[in-house]
Length: 153
Image (tube, rainbow, N blue to C red; front, side, top):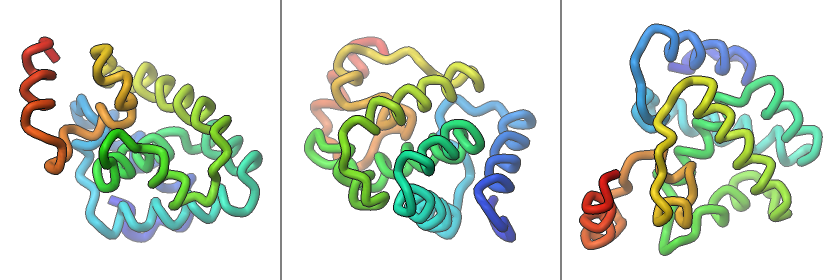
């Protein structure tokens, strides 16, 4: 999807165009290759690593969908034992917990703007909404999956 993208702005435009053409309920359903995910990791990590405040402003204002997809793929690949944010911190170099709230608010705006799945049970809120948009990672225990299905998710 991002082949030939020069920057995050072009990536954002491609994601928006795709969502205008295709019905998607979860950001984790977007047809991204491993190269696409790696590209996002690098571009967003560099943007936030230069200056977390300015990088966050850019991502939230100019490329929120690309940032949301990045957050989802962090959850898909690295969520472990109730810990979502450590992977994001490692990837971005930003460990200040204040950014979690800013990034989470941005993520919720993306869901509303694009009319993506927003019904989240109380149990999922503990795991994070970004994780819920990813789909269900293969390494999470079957009993938790069964409990979520039983809750009407």
